[in-house]
Image (cartoon, rainbow, N blue to C red; front, side, top):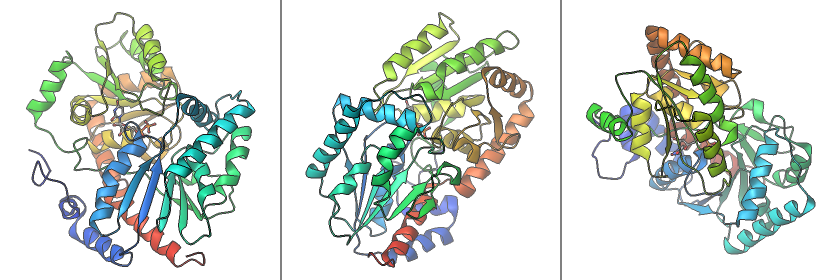
Length: 412
Ligand code: UDP
């Protein structure tokens, strides 16, 4: 059985009433009514791969449906630009940074090229993450509203990178962070905006058990034995090698298989190198399945999450971790690094287990494999937690309310 009201046709806001209730849907339409005729542009740096693209792909059609036309603009850049922004990303998450001045020049030049290519004149311009942040320079007389949506944890940024980016950020009308813990003292208003998942999307909708089985069969994974899975881009901050080491400890005591499934994003140049590191750590263990998935593998990821015994997200840094949300929604207990937005989702011993090391991760995998009743209870709690806080309709409502608030501000 699937939850999609009518497979094969586009989803509509009313379809979500079955999940979040008709009053919520009515409220969204009522708020949107006050924004009729207003236009929105959302700008990010990749059309596929990673959580931001995932959110925009689901949010924008609903914005359109409620009468707020929204364009999704994807900035373009060469490999040098994305190498620089990846270094910025890591440095903003507190990693060592040895950048040179030319990196800032590259960053500004690419932002400028995009400013020339994309006219940002909608009533509300939402710029996602640091990559396009300097496009604020194309703002003329402030008749429209500019919002910076930061999806990463800025609590301990590298000072060189942050002092370069900060003046751009402070030219915006508002900033949005996934958690109050991630912010910096800024001269502009800051709002909390948790990321969300779409419960009716192929990635999250209910699936026939036969389909789930067929996906595991296709990848040669035995569903009769426990399966521990991490879904993530191959990124060092997601610590795939740490997950393999944890699994190798567990295997000394308990039977299980490990699945590490992920693709890459066009704005992440390090994916192949990290996949190779994971391959080397895995050696020739036939129970470790490293799956390099194409970006359109929504149903496969859904099936892997649904058919796994335990989900892991052993991130060392994490903006939010939509993979955690997706797993909790599917009633899976999640063992995850105690970092970033994971702390909003994995409530220790309630929806999953928080860990700080390879050994801790191994310990909790063993513990939950040995205590399936507890694992089941956590999964159920996780589903409720996501339903309360992290579904797409909540994100839509928050944006609409924010736009209404900004419209009443003096700059409007
Ligand atoms: N994802 C995907 N294919 C992959 C790996 C991840 O579609 O190979 C999806 C995953 O299901 C989730 C998103 O990409 O929806 C990743 O978001 P998250 O916030 O977990 O991490 P990010 O990649 O943005 O750091």
